Image (cartoon, rainbow, N blue to C red; front, side):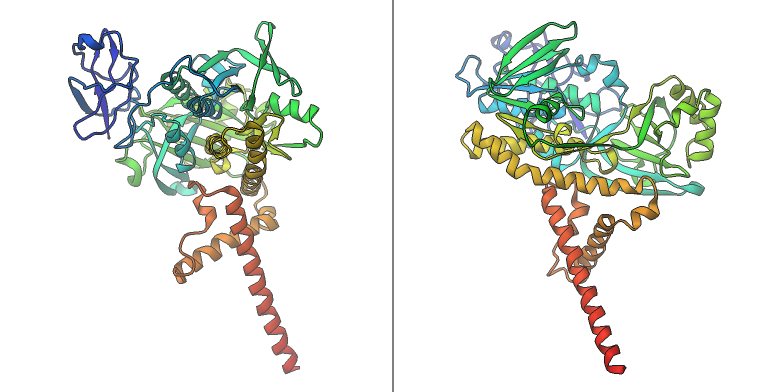
Amino acid sequence: MYCCAVAFADCGCLTATRKDHTACVPLQSACPVRSLHCPGSWSHNLRDTQRQIKCLEVVARPCSRGPRCFTTCSSTQTAEAPATQGAQTKGHVVIIGAGPGGSTAAILLAKRGYKVDVYERRPQSKQDPVDLKRTYIIALSERGLKPMRAAGVSIPCDAPYKGFVRHLKGGKVQVSPVEGNVSFERAELAQHLISEANRLTPDVKYHFEQGLHSIDFDKQTAMVQTHDGIMSEVQYDLLIGADGVGSTVRSQMEQKLPGMKVKVEDSGREYKTYRGLRADLEPPELRDRPGRSIHIFLGQNSWTSLSGHLNPDGTYAGTLAMKNGEFEKLSTAAEYEGVIRKGVSGVPEHWIADIAEQCLHASPSPQGRRVWCSRLTGPRVVLVGDAAHAVTPVGGQGANAALEDTLFLNDILQSTGDDLASAVANYDRERLPDAHGLVDIESTFSKLVGNKLAAALDPQFLKLVVHVAFGSAMHKLLPFIRKRQPALVQLGSDMRYSDIMKEVNRDAATVAALLLAALLVVCLRLAKVL
């Protein structure tokens, strides 16, 4: 994979196109570049990307495992031109939350002609010690990449997600290579989308360290509050709650809107983080491929595990996860070492002391909560991402689903001609089944974290197993009837969660009917014998 290194001069970073027509977007300043003179006619007009810019020289260099070089992967995509400032807008959109879902929604709606203000109670991701502490990666599949492409966001090509490795007892490993996905650390993705919003449009404005205090749904106003207690009232035409699992927007809806019901369930696990470790962990299937991988070191019980992901700089970072309350029982590095040595398989010996020391001084964080909502909308208000349907990391769907929400909303605005009242109603009607389908799928997967025997006897879990087994057999034996793999193994595609659950239920019903018919035949034969 190659980065486009574009000429820098006093005038800034040029947007350029290589001879093979692969589009390059402006690179981060940390990328290796070659400084060349900029034509005088462009010295003061580089922000005007609507005009054709011909680069003096473009250098293609292999991407190293150092600074990230952000480029577009499409062979035809070009840098988007910023919207015209001062043009007539379709309305004012207020977004609460500057995470991946909030920023992607901001870009999409600004491109539609809305003025967008994004309020985030925390500091900007790159300056937030809490956000930077969340050392977990997000693997974006087609479900999450499609909305980013629709928004014109540049997608990094230098750090694909290359696969998943399970470390088992006795030194055995199970490798699951992955193609076509892109990986980010959570804070990195949030910051990249903020930077892209600033690059793509002047109609998105961020307000950091200002959180939502309350909403007046009748007046269509939101009261926001700075970290030092200063209040201000903001009028909106559309309010988007993208403020995560502990959403204040959702809480206001639950308190003030009749019929709004919310169920929140904790995963039962918490984690501590570590960083900066090195080891030769990559299996042969992944060793020569660029990008990140995720390693899971399984424990003797289903609650304890250790994860590690390979970073572009060659180091590993990850988490030690345990059942709620277990960290409180550990007070020394030696006790942490004991847990890792006795409870987790395959961890490199020279990692153990470092992980123990880092975890001893770290604070635990909850490893996800599950949120189910009876509705996703209120008067001119919609919920997206974890505010609408939070799930644990088990299925790797949280960020992908959040980004998909934003494209879903954008498409509904398009289909309704930006009639906001109709769009809000349609979003709730169309997206709610997907939100419930996602929570159902993930909650069933999560049953494996805990009592595996209880999971195996759970009817919902058995449905998933039957669906995968029956669908795979039909696809293999009768491909002219079942033309693709079971829907559940295509979570990374953009197949709707509600459609996946429909197929799961249909296959389970088919197998139940076949078993019932077989049982009836056996009973009839036995009756004749008797």
